[in-house]
Image 1 (tube, rainbow, N blue to C red):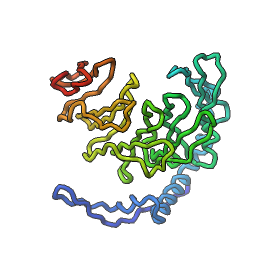
Image 2 (cartoon, one colour; image 1 turned 180 degrees about the vertical axis):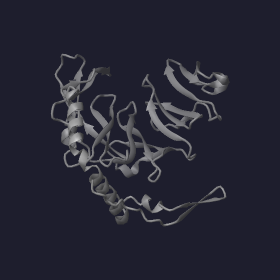
Image 3 (cartoon, rainbow, N blue to C red; image 1 turned 135 degrees about the vertical axis):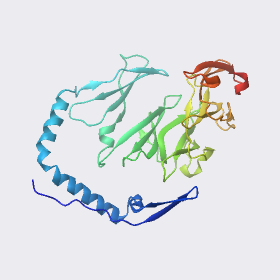
Image 4 (cartoon, rainbow, N blue to C red; image 1 turned 45 degrees about the horizontal axis):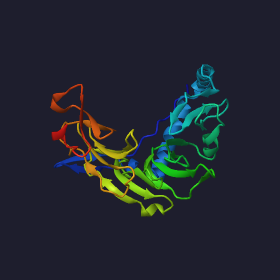
Length: 309
C-alpha cells in the first residue's frame, strides 16, 4: 500500500478560564465551523481517509448490498390511531426516505399522503423530517426539517386541506411543537446557537411573522434542558426542565395559551418527577422519599405542590 501523509492540524493556543483555572486549547480555532481554514483542513482529512481506505471500496459496496438484501425495501409501519385518524409510514423500493400517510376513522378509508420525504429531500445532501404534530382540528401539521445534520431544525406548518406549506418558518428549534386546543398557537423549543442546549420555550401565533414569537420560559441553568409537551388527556400544556438528577414541571390549560405557566413543584436537588393528568388530579412518578425505583403519587390539580402529593 502506498504511504500517504496524514494532515497535521496547526496549533493556535486559546485560553479558557473558568472557576479560577486556565486551560489551553490548541484546537479552539476548529470551532469556527464555516471558516475557510477549517473547511480546508476537513477536506484534507477526508482526502486522507479516502486514500487510506481505497482498497476497501468494493468491500463497502458488497457489505451494503448484503445488508440491503436482508431488508424488505417495500415496508409499512404498524398504524396507530390518534384523534380520529390512522397514521402510518411506508418505505418503497428504490427510495431513501419514508412516505407519511393517514386514513380517516377506518383503515379501509381513502389513503391521504401527508409527506413524500423523497421529494422534499431533492437538492439536499442531508435531510431529516421530525416532530410531526397535527393540530387538534386535523387541518394542519407542524414538522421540523434539518438539512445540515446538526439537529438544528426549522419548523414549518402545512395546511392539510390545501397541501400548501405556510411561508412562516421557525428556526433553530428542536423540531417538535405543541398545539394549543384552539388550533392557532404553537409552543416550541429553541436551542442556544452555540451549545445547541434546549433552553427557551416560545409561543407562536399562527400566521404572524416568526419574529413576533414570544418567549414564555427561559432555562438559565446550563445543566438543565427544557422541553414542552401536551398531557395525554390533551387538557394541559407542560414545560419540563431536567438535569441529570432534578426535574421541574410547569403547566397551563391547553385552551388558555396566553395564561401564565404555574410550577407543579419548584426544583429540589435530586428530586426527579414527571406529571400525568387525569380528571381532577395530576399523577406524579417520582423518587421522592428515597424511592430508588420511583413511586406513583397523586395530587389535586389545584394543589400541585409536593407537600400535597
